[in-house]
Every structure is written in structure tokens, then in C-alpha cells.
Length: 161
Image 1: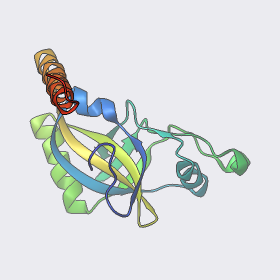
Image 2: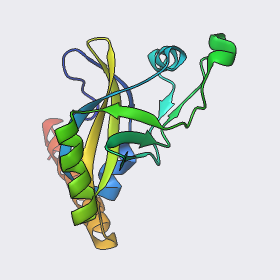
Image 3: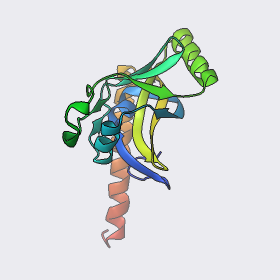
Image 4: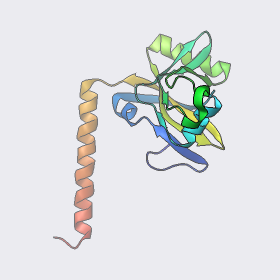
């Protein structure tokens, strides 16, 4: 999913912009997520945060850890812990493949975004490898060069010399 633009039928709830800078994204996939009613209402209000969250495989099931979904105030005592582990819904074969990638190659599963698709909450997961410091510096340098090029292009269009 492109940053800032939403694909047809998707309503973005939250994105993990920091993940794109800290990690090298190797593979992406879409997963469902098991939620309780008040959590869905809170997500409809856009009250979620994916910073510092990750996914891990335990006993053949995939869980999202540290994702914060704020309590829905009108729900009262039906609210669950905002940072509780939430089960992610993928086919067993996909979970087995991800588990192998994580254990053998030392990769990590990070949520990139949380969105509604056809009325259901979905998580865009990425299989990532941590970037080294020099890779981060390279990304910053490339971004700044792109900005300078865009400024130069805009400057020409205004009738300047």
C-alpha cells in the first residue's frame, strides 16, 4: 500500500512509518486479526498505534504483540487490555513458512499498517531484516537528494532562470 494514498476499498487506520526506515522489507502479506467488539469501534475512530509492535509465532499460531488499540470509552468494563496479544489469521502453511523464515534466517515480522478492507480489519505484515547504521544514513542521503531535485524542478516551472 502506497504511503498517503489508499487503494480502492481500503480505509487506513494506522501505519508504522518508522518501520520503513528501520528495516529492509523483504516480503509483505495481508492477515486478518481477531478482535473484540469494542476494539473494532475504537479502530473505526482511528485510535490505534503500531509503534514498537511485532508479530511472533507460538505453537503454530501467529500473534501481534505490543499494538496499542485505545479502549472504547462507551464500552465500560467490556474493554480488554489495550496492549494485549491479538491473534493474526493466516493459513497454516503461510504461518509455517513465516516461522521457518524467522527462525532460520533471523528475520522479524513487523506490522506496516492496519486498515479496513470490505468492512474487516486487516494487518499488512512485513518480513524484515534490520538495517545497519550506514544503510539508514544512505536512506537519509537519498531522500535529501530527491528533495533537492524536486525543488530544482519546481523552481524551473515558475519562470525563474
